[in-house]
Structure formats: C-alpha cells, structure tokens
Image (cartoon, rainbow, N blue to C red; front, side, top):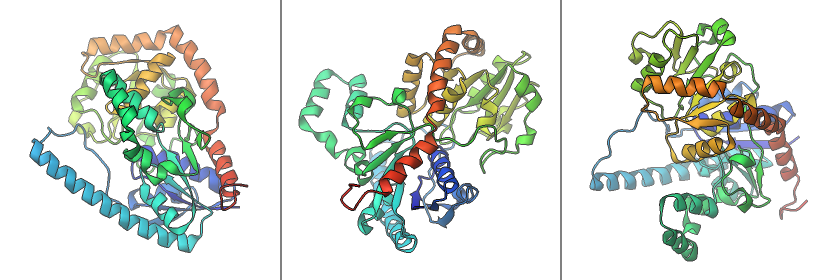
Length: 403
C-alpha cells in the first residue's frame, strides 16, 4: 500500500482523468489525498479520497472570448496575469508542502498545468510524477506546431538557437518529473517517437462506462429522453466545458435536425439552454449531461476534439464530427481525421450542410471500419490500471531513482 498526494488542475477536462486515476488507486487499497479547490472536492470524496481544500483561482470561460483589447491594454493584462499566476503558484506550493509534511506521500502526482504540485515535491524531497490531461509537450512537438504556421527558416533558427528549452512546457519541474503519465494513446501523440522512457501513454483515463449519474456538475440524468436516446439514431453534441460554442451554433444544430428521426442531445455548458429559445420536440438541451452514458448510444458525436472526449469516442467506436476551438484541439482533430475516425466540420456551416455531413458520417462504412479497429485497441489499454501499475513501480524506486 502506498500513500499518494494528487494535485489536479481546476478544469473539468483535467479533473476527470485525475479522478479516474484516484478511483483506481483507492480501489487497489492505496491511501489518496487530493489537494483541490472546493468546486471539485466532492468528485474526489465520492471515490474514497481524503480531500484537502485549497483556494485556487477558477479557470473558466463563458462562451466565446471577448474582442481583443488594444496592444497597451493587452500588455498590462498579460503582466498582471503573470504576477497573479506566480503569486498563486508560490502560495499553493507552500500549502502543498505543508500537506506533504502531514500526509507523507510516497509520490506526488501533479497535473502538468499545476506546477505548484511539482514545486512542493521538489521542496520537500518527495518523488514526483507528472500527468498530462492531453498530449504531452516537448521541443519537437512545439517545433512541429511552429512548422505548420511558419517558414522553414524560422523552424531552423529556433532549433539552432535552442530557445525552446526556455519554454515553460520544457523547463518546468513538472516536465522533468521521473515519471510522466499521459492521458493519450500513441496515435494521438504528436512526435510520439521523440519521447523517452519517462513517458507512459496510459490513456484513456476515464470513469466506468454506463453511469447515468455523471459527475457532480451534471444535470439530473432522469430528465433526458433515455428511451429515444437508446432507440436512435442519436446525435450527441458537446463543444467543451472550458469554452463552448454560443447559442447560434446550437440553434443551427437544432434547426438541422428538426422534425427528423434523429434524437439530438445538446450539452451547452456555459451557454444557457434558455438562450436557444423553443427547441424541436426531438432536441434536448442541458448545460451538462452524463457524457459516457449518452455516448454509449450515440451514432455521431459532434465534438470540440478535447482529449477526454476524443478518447471516449474512440473506445466506444462513435464517429466524430469535429469543431475544435484551441490549438491542442485542432491538432487532435487533424489526427482523428487522418486516422479515419471522423471529419472536420465548419462551425459556421448552414443547417442543411451540417445535417448532410453528419448523416453521411453516420453511414460511412470506411469510418465504421476504422473505428472498429481503433476502438479495440483503445479499450484494451485500461488507462487507470496501467497508470496505477506505473505509479506502484515508481514508488518502489530507491532515492536515486533506481530500484
């Protein structure tokens, strides 16, 4: 039995894989303490963890970002954000160092975006494992991203100058942990061959399938039309919990499938379902739904291509219509298209075009064949069990990092 201290990052997309890891750890008899902010505390208590509540500034976005301010205002805002982030990091590292002294964990598992966990582990001489909720970053991944947007000369200059070694994703203590768990599969990891033995691609880190109760943030699952969802055909739409598409996008989806045989479930997150107006009888909108349970019956998943959503759809063999918003989502979406698991969709497409794309995707035998193979491979990984085995081995290493 080992003692583990987990330091999640306060976003649903990061908490979900960490909670799956925590559940597996407690199921195997390990003692788990989680340092997390109050909105996510119950998620970890529900799986048997001891929770230490800490004050972490919320990371959230309500719909689309506002218009960009002027250059001077942007610079001032950036400086203020850096100061606030640095102050928070120091405060949280000190608080977690106190918790390490109390709980005496064998390993601290820190989200790669929660560097206070790695800072506290280093300050107390405690072994640290890092965890990526999406694909991992290193110099080669960053260079490959630059290469898609810049001239080859720029890439050559960056490589020769070694400036990227100063990038936070490369120099931060979390990136130098002795063990790095990645909530991904090799097929979704850019520049996979450039990662060494410290990296373990254990994903998908996901909760048990079939739980209609969902997470603490989910609306009442009993309100969903389960008979219709299970009968199908069903389109499930979720464009993320950090930032989501606005009311106009969801109204277009509803219009596209109005009065059809399709059952449409919209998870609108920061967009209030009331903003959508009156919906067709076959369309249901909720801020949050138990995604795993709905996806089990979905024929198509209209998704932002976040890593958790992509992995879940791969495991369940659900074709994906992809509307990414951020850089990592665009990379994941491109890889999913290349793997034959889905198609890219223009979020501004008119209703008729959107309906044609999604109905065509549902009937595409090539996509179904690709997903059959991908689903079998993803399901075999058993991410939580694999991650726990790696942590157990890591906890058994000696002080110098050797057995």
